[in-house]
Amino acid sequence: MAAAPILARRIARSGVLPLCCRPPSWDRAPRQPPGLPLAPCRAFSNNKIQVELDESSGVAMMKFKSPPVNSLSLDFLTEFSISLEKLENDRACRGVIITSTIPKIFSSGLDIMEMCGKNVEHYGEFWRAVQEMWLRLYGSNMVTVAAVNGSSPAGGCLIALSCDYRIMAENPKFSIGLNEAQLGIVAPFWFKDTFVNVVGHRIAERSLQLGSLHPAPEALKLGLVDELVPEEKLLEKASAVMARWLALPDHARQLTKSMMRKAVLDHLVAHREEDIKNFINFISKESIQKSLRMYMEMLKKKKS
Ligand SMILES: CCCCC/C=C\CCCC/C=C/C(=O)SCCNC(=O)CCNC(=O)[C@H](O)C(C)(C)COP(=O)(O)OP(=O)(O)OC[C@H]1O[C@@H](n2cnc3c(N)ncnc32)[C@H](O)[C@@H]1OP(=O)(O)O
Image 1: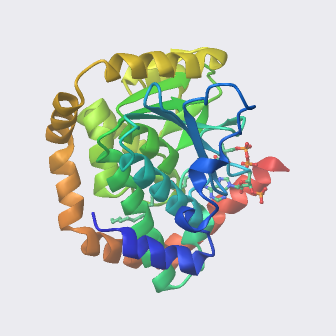
Image 2: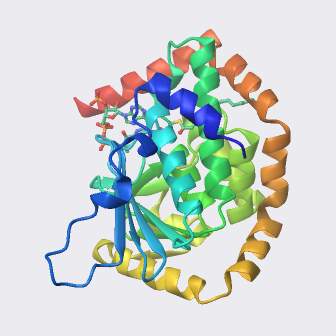
């Protein structure tokens, strides 16, 4: 994936500072008092995502911190891809736990405002960033564990589905699923394939057609998440799961993961430009724009 030049251009245009141009990122970990041994922890943080790598375990903790709801805007997606790329290229990192700092929300999915009332160039750029995020996460060599500590509709669910293991807080008020149909839009084939690979064809077909958001206990029954734990135990459990996965030799696990995911990844790589065109054509339709506007209004009304 030769994404670096594309990312660089996008960052320049979006105004998000690339990590490489910030003060040396690994220096931003808290300084130790003199005399104490250095903690084997490196941290970097950008506007919307914070990452801490524990060098002794090889595990990075990635926390989404983009209020109010961690929506996946172009800037967020760019930062996410850069963070993943940094960790992927860091020999000290073998696994990443993904979670959120926002109470009750893992991620609200793609930022609907990025898909409303914008021009064709913007839609193309946005969709390429969505693709890139998924290619990096689904195709990652690292062990990826989602610690889903809140609601996780659509694109948020895709992030969790793209990980190797999903642990969700056992709160029945938190829900997860690909609810695109409820917005009058359609999950693209690679969202669908990722979903099918986790829950199987029948469950995916029903859930996608109905645009279902499954409360945590139901998500567990469907196999959409692997286990539920009390919220306060979520990160502890994620670390324990991570340790179990990291106990295996990396090369054997990585080759197995790649064998399981290759067909789905290759499908998008081979049809990337066509997929972008499809997105642009679809999202530019006046009827789709109307559906999205109505959905946003419904969200706002729900508040008042
Ligand atoms: C045939 C070929 C097809 C090719 C492909 C074509 C199609 C495209 C496919 C696109 C795939 C799309 C994937 C997506 O991810 S779409 C996004 C789906 N997301 C949702 O449905 C979530 C909507 N949000 C909620 O349900 C709730 O906000 C919540 C996440 C459960 C949080 O609830 P709560 O804590 O009560 O917060 P509020 O509802 O009050 O929200 C706070 C403010 O945030 C705004 N918001 C929420 N979600 C989004 C979002 N996804 N994008 C942008 N903005 C969002 C919300 O409006 C509030 O804003 P306000 O404070 O200004 O009112």
